[in-house]
Image (cartoon, rainbow, N blue to C red; front, side, top):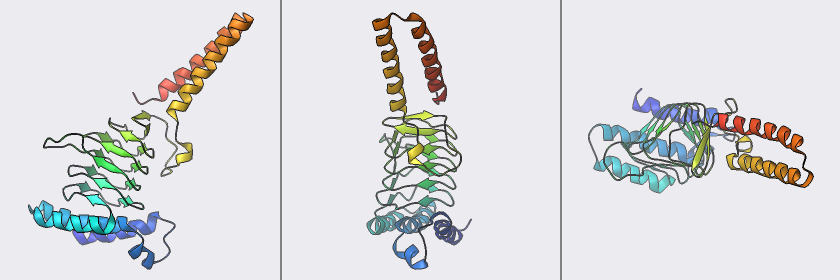
Length: 234
């Protein structure tokens, strides 16, 4: 796909994905993400031609105007939508697939100063929530979700959900809704609830001596814990 066709598609992607857009005026003045992509498309095209100074200059101008830092070497796919965009950082060896949605303050960063691939690979259809940090040469599988403010340092499988600091990946995912933060799994909360229930059963047994009740409740809790472990993407 040609450079100008890519840029045109980037602008059309905003129209398709953001219900808050009502006019071309808003698209020009209120969407730094699409302008950051425009600067990147041009700088990346020049970067692939073997140039270095000019792409970095264009990238720097784009960063100054949009508050989005995308290295010219980063490979960004089609129909990428960077919503609100402010504070997004995408490193040099990052690879981002098609139809990816990235919210503000996201970092696709490295954890090494060595040469070579040191930034994440984001496959098609991934959604990365606001403030998330995806670090290192890891892969986020197709249609996966990264919860807001999560710190991801390990691979995330296709159609999985990663939340937490550091992020833990679960196999539960809620259809194809882009990112519903109110129904994201809270792994720590679920585990603490399990422990509290188990302690309550033990205290009740010590007070009453009702071992049959303990055996029944213990079996129920084991089923809950097994379901919890099965949901983890291990």
